[in-house]
Length: 109
Image 1: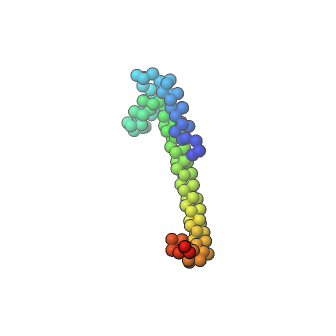
Image 2: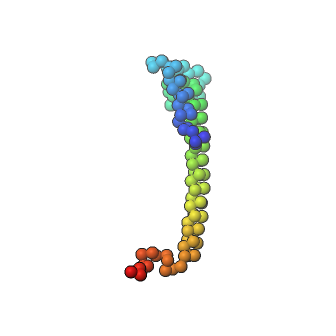
Image 3: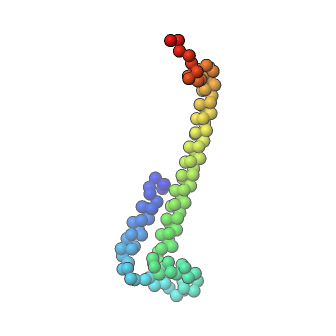
């Protein structure tokens, strides 16, 4: 999922919802929810609609998946870099000491 923009994945649904909603309208919250939910959650539902928690959860899950994928890729790249660094050290040891520092070479002019 990280290959796609996580924001773009959910942006269309949010924009469509905003286009459908008149600017001055507020959504109705069922009475059962008013008693069970915190005031902040009710404000979100009134402003964005009953589907807002679902969209936000899907967005968060997608974002979490993208972060996990990036962390895994970072770990893999780091391991490869360490292997390459070890290989460079091994190859440098194969080069004779006098050839390791080309600035120290004297010309036969």
